[in-house]
Amino acid sequence: MNNLKLIGPFKQIIPMTRLPLKGAIKDESLTIIEDSGILIEGEKIYAVGDYDDLLTLAKANKAEIHPLTGDHTCIPGFIDAHTHICFGGSRANDYAMRNAGKTYLEISKAGGGIWDTVTQTRKATKEALVKGIIKRAKRHLTNGVTTIEVKSGYGLSVDEELKMLYAIKEANEKLANDLIPTCLAAHMFPKDHSGSPSDYLEEVSSGLFPKLKEENLAHRIDAFIEEGAFSESLIAPYFQKARAFGFDITVHADQFSTGGSKVAVDYSAVSADHLEASTETEIALLAKSDVIPVALPGASLGLGCAFTPARKILDAGGALAIASDHNPGSAPMGDLLTQASILGAFEKLTNAEVLVGITLRAAAALKLSDRGQLGQGYLADLSIFHTNDYKEILYNQGDFKPCMVWKKGELVYNKHKH
Image 1 (spheres, helix red, strand yellow):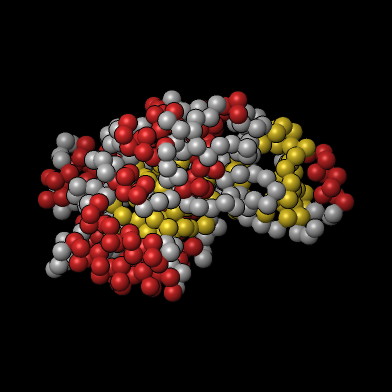
Image 2 (cartoon, rainbow, N blue to C red; image 1 turned 180 degrees about the vertical axis):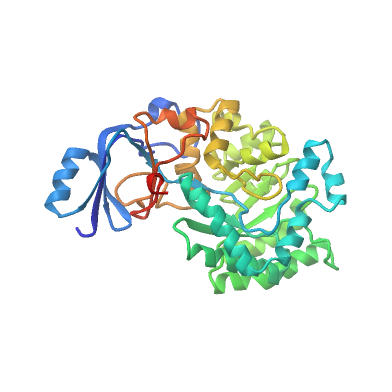
């Protein structure tokens, strides 16, 4: 054993282990390890257990000791499985107009909507996009988020989508958090495209898919299935080609109308995200599948609309991840813990269901098997809170932030030194 570090003692460690991937979870199912420590070897956890036992082992192996004074609780680093933090400009005007009663169509006619962000993102240099991603990701880190999925989708041409994906890759090399890129070229049909929507999808798939593979820019393909975006029939050749290339598929589904969740199931998508419009039919369909439903409470808060029917999804036997949807239009807040706490209050989710939704099940929504839990062999991604009771974290509805964050065995944020 080398490069060993011991952190502790913790009043509580909530390892999020031995929990099901699907279905409802009672708080009594959570394992709570008291008076405990975490022994790290390199980037990974070597052991979680009684602090005194681990201290003896650490001293015998000349490990670095990182003693904690006062009461601390540790849970896995949070995973935000759906964001759009690569963008140019702002849509503050959209938000003001929407709250003043303007419709989506009226906002769009006034120069707002997704196309406004596309225009501003196209104007931005790659360097400016990198700077924006880094700023937002660092804020996520102070909130305990150690892994962030990041979509393209505001370029809507081969060159502009590549610019976004290059920016995400470059930002990832400069950050402590891990960024997981997703290609969302099928976000909407670009207003300036001279052909049909099917022509556009053929153009971007032919121009992008080989490049994504060749330069390892993304292994995930997303599409917005909605009346104002792409239909099930239009997206079929696009997803078939994505599967032929070996990409993972994810779907913006059932946000305003249903249909997207069926597409997700039909194409064995890793996740179906949004689901605010899902009815009993879609919920049952998802629950019987291996698709991970992802709730995006930030979009509900930003748009002032209903939340994803999280309680019904869980009670039907479905999985449930929770993500921020951080974007400049419908979900500008970007605070995962706050949003997850609020969703829990409105949908009557247990603490266990909320926390598993931003750790273990969020990892599954990204097909990441090396994080989301605290146990031997998992990445040493830790969110540490100054409390003797993990229930305080959600009780404060996002106002209670981590005092320390570790990423891959390194202390990357210490509130007391900022």
